[in-house]
Amino acid sequence: MQNIEQAVHFLEKYNLVLSTAESATAGLLAATVAAVPGCDGVLESGFVVYSKRAMQSTLGVKPETLETFGMNSEEVAREMALGVLMASSADIILAITGAPTADDKRDQEVYDGAMCFACATRLAEHQGVTSETVTFPGDNNERRAAAARHALLRLPYYYERLRQTS
Image (cartoon, rainbow, N blue to C red):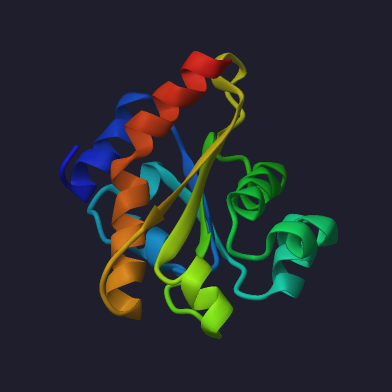
């Protein structure tokens, strides 16, 4: 898959409705889908949870998960995705958290540019959640845009991965 329109067509082909959970990308993922004409049949909602408190209160991310793994982790991305499954009626969820920029020297060594992705589905034959971490080059906005694009273009991969593990 090479462009965002193909991601929307993938959702249409498999009769999937998408919701998003976003921290680092702050709604860019949902906005990218919304920019495609005809997306209204495949996009349900987008949750922007930029703080730990919002992650906990809106999506049910556990305080222990945040404390143990940090906001910028696959574990948090997975809980974000599962939280949207509970809060929406969408079939498939894409979640993104990460650190497009590091706050301090320790973060820079560990997280700078790393974005964590999770995809979850409620479909009986593919139920579950999968995740990955990818590091992107560039400045903050370039990393955010790359993360949103990456998540959408990886939809078929995530879907197949969920299908194989169920």
